Image 1 (cartoon, rainbow, N blue to C red):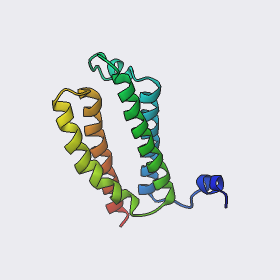
Image 2: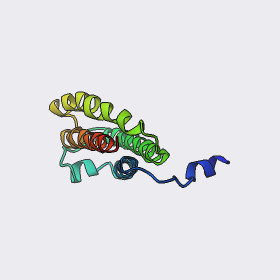
Image 3: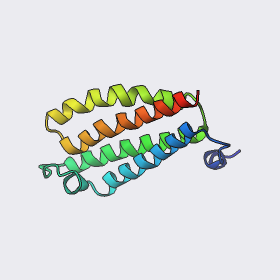
Image 4: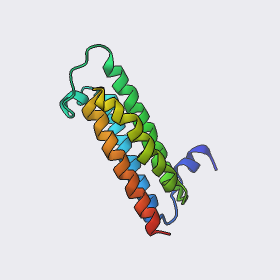
Length: 135
């Protein structure tokens, strides 16, 4: 098969956990795209302080990272691999809060990063619950 055929191949019957990963991928893709296209959303939606320098470029980089994560969740879920859900749980429940909570307490984009520090572990716990249910 060609590269694009492999990429766009329609998956077989997906488990609920895989469908959940795909949904998470779409959420992250949309959120990342928002930050790339409109870095000022950090002030408008999240009520963080105005940029003092070139922080809008950093917000775009965060958006790119979030969009890439979304892309990987989308296709990881579409693969139907059982190990994808559990593989995503540890980093989401342990690593993300361990890195983001100190940044939030230091005042670095507190509302934006605080949202990720809560949302990502919550979605990771959802993946864990769905995986355990499908065992």
